[in-house]
Image (cartoon, rainbow, N blue to C red; front, side, top):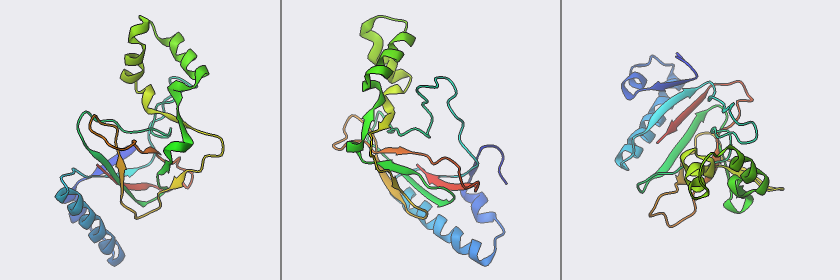
Length: 183
């Protein structure tokens, strides 16, 4: 069924799958979560993930989803996600992470990449998503989100009253496809 690294499974496609009895029970759970999220005003997407593309550009500063990062939106929203099969995501308490652009050596390296006036440096960081990524502090203890748990993650947006959730996608160590609902 996978049609690439990430294959989206539509609602109608999920409903039309021929499944075993256990598969039908699993589908009912997926459909219930899908409807719950839609009733909450979200637009859920169900993906089968072999792996995400890696950021090969800057070896000292990857900006892919395997790095701890926060999500940003111009409007009030949250990220919802649930891993139903495969390796689950992780979150990191905000007190256990440091924004990478504030680490002096990283900041200096990014300034060498930036070709513009000093006044535009912060915009450069934001436009290239560098400001969204975090480094775990020594002794940090990431929290595994587990399989079958629907999580609501705080997002960085102008009206947010809480810190955004530091999270990352899992490295595919098990070799299993990941089934993830996200919105």
